[in-house]
Structure formats: C-alpha cells, structure tokens
Length: 350
Ligand code: SAH
Image (cartoon, rainbow, N blue to C red; front, side):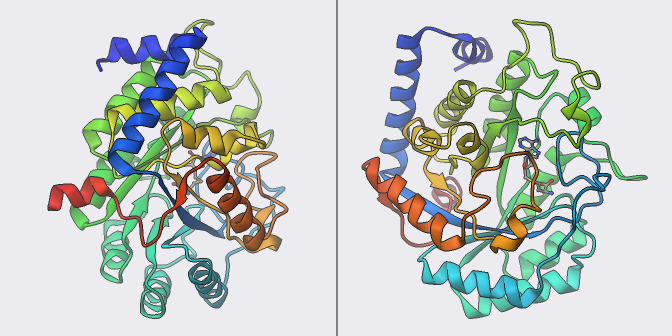
C-alpha cells in the first residue's frame, strides 16, 4: 500500500469501506499471529521526569503533581505478582527519571531475571548508550519508545530536548536494535498540527524501522500542559488536521497491521479511555494482538496521569487481570501463554 492509499483510508468516512478495512486487518492478524492475545503487565515505576514534553501530564514543570519512585522491593513484588497471574512479560515504564541510575536499574533487572522467567520491557525514555547497553546485558529484552510523530518540526516543538542534548528517537531506536533489544515504538493520533499526510508517513516509518511492537493511541489534552491550551500549538487547517478520535485510532491500528503483519500491536489504555466499554475489544478486533493490564500499585496510579481520566485508575492489579481476561475471552480470542516474543524478530533470525 502506498502513501496515497494510506491517506485515502485515513480519510474515508464510508462505513462500508471502513468495515472492509477492519476485516482485512483482522484477517491479516489471524493468519500471521493466530488468536492468542498476550498480556503484558505494566508497572509505572516512577512519575519523576526531567523533560517538559508539551503533551504529557507528568512533565517536569507540572508542579501540581506529587512525585514517586517505587522502591526496588516493591517492583520485584509486582513482578512476582505478574508471574502468579501467568503474564509472560512486564513493562517497566517511567518518566525520564535520572534518579533511576544505571546501577540501580541494572541490579533490579538482574533480580527480576534471576527470580522469574519474565520477559522484561523497559520504557524509560532517552537514556545514554552506556545505560541502555548495561541494562540489555543485565537481561532486559525489549525497549519501548514512541517517536510520537514523524513530522520532525512538530516533534521538535512538542518534545523539547534537554539542555545540551539532541533528541533523535528514530536514531536511538536503530541503536537499540543493534544493542540487541526487540524494539517498540508508536505515535499519538490527533496531535494539534498533525496532518493526514504526517500520519501516513508515521505508518510507513513503522514499516521501514521494522518494529517488533507498535503502540498507537489518541492524543488526549491535559490541562496542565502547553497542548492543553489551544493557542500554543494550533490545529492544522480543517480537513487536513487529524482528529483525535476513537475511529481514527482504529484506522491506524488496522493500517499498521496491514503494513506490519508480524508486529505485536497493543489495544491501548488511551483507546480504552475514549471508549471504556468496548474500546479494548474493538482494537483487538481491528488488528491488535496485545493488551497491557496495569499492575501499578493502586496508591501510585493517579499520580501517573500522563493524560486526564486515564482508564483503570481506581483498579487493582487483580481487577485489571480479571477485566482483561474477560474481555479477551468474550471476543472469542484466547489468552497467549509464554513470553509472546516478537514473531517479527524470530522469523528473521530463524
Ligand atoms: N518517559 C517515557 C514514557 C512516556 S509515557 C518516554 O518518553 O518514552 C508513554 C507514552 O504516553 C508516550 O510515549 C506518549 O505517546 C503517551 N502520552 C503522553 N501524553 C499523552 C497524552 N496527553 N495523550 C495521549 N498519549 C500520551
């Protein structure tokens, strides 16, 4: 599918055409990956952050927020809980928190890997090459870092670099692959200023980066951020600006599945936030094969408010497990066992 075709799909409002897209994506998912849905336990280990991204509620300048960093023992307890829930993977996510040092993280990864068979995914932002290599050596398997948008002008605006440091996530993703990680990335959908053409470029970039995991979700404005006030970053002209809707998110999931048949694609929390009743299920029915139940201890959840009214904020890890399993089974899919490694990487190595 070329870029013009992707743009045409993104723009279509024809319900029958959309149905056709959902069907194609579901079929490609089924043929390549089967019916298993893998669960990744998400542990939001710190909301401290050095950066000031214009979209994100845990940005450094948000003084309203109480900050936390989970102690290592507590993270390990969550990892053991993930084992008891038969999850094959945990995702350790945080703000770009330099209080998480190379040594501290290295020790934590080694503990988790020696006490469990879990695959460990890190999502800790743009860390140094030395840190990324040390954490891989300690046993971390995968790294998740969205490039947010392939429009470099928009990216530079909404994702200011740290003083004296450039921010090239696309380059860093390539390095992560060389270091030996499975790599995951993705974008937000409907960022003010993001055009249909930009979004089609994003999907093409997923393919050329040859990603193992691709997470996409709607942009949700947070009042404590610059993008929370419309005048800072205006929308592209009407008809060109991508809307941050549920429907657009399904289109991007489906088109991503067609572009990257073997990638692991989650049905995300941001999507569930727009449609708490059936968003997860519809994501799974339109190309996704992964869900990421939240395992963050309940007392921290409200503090990891990257966007407002985030789904699952009042639940416990056990609630989220029961909810996700129920949703998967009622859609006629099965629960994946094992680590759910990327078929993309495996098939290439084989
Ligand atoms: N510090 C890590 C993790 C960030 S949170 C990093 O920067 O990679 C994970 C993802 O949440 C971000 O990559 C971004 O795509 C998404 N996110 C942040 N703010 C959001 C918002 N307002 N609406 C929707 N998604 C958002």
